[in-house]
Length: 251
Image (tube, rainbow, N blue to C red; front, side):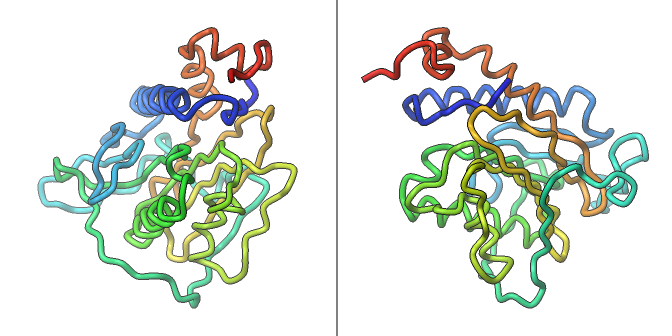
């Protein structure tokens, strides 16, 4: 299913779809994609932020960090590099903004990764963009991996997309966003150094399979296309027609 032009509908409809996609991703991850002892929760508080999907590892009694996932529970980066067109490595010498934030789950289980689906509210003003970037940078600096899904076009406050705004914190010079493919899906391995695995697409393109990192050297493939389709099936028929061009955009 091609990615739709979500600017054709009001933000409230995208928010409804956004919530359904979160649920489908959570269900797919918990349905066997994550290794044993890992699990995903939707729309949880992580420190002072709310995130879309948390990937967590069940705490051991002694509080030890999680072991490497078993060979059948994830893909080793060295053996199966992600099939993406762009890979970036952050500069270890570039001065990043430093902030203090303890990201914990209320259960005490260890936070491994975040999945963030960008919504119109993340781009509606400069303060929203800055807060979003702050959350991403803080998570990565604390060793939490991130999968960023930005299916909305760049706006006045994020002219190179939200990945471009995030990557500005890890590399010098502006990020080069392809004009013909303004939508971005980005998978970040926290490192150090931080590495980004990127695909760009346009409205009408298919969602690629992206890595969701559990460790900097191990990941699972995130089922973006299948979960997007499942979530879209729940969109009301009237709005499906608008999004797919069978009905004129209201008003």
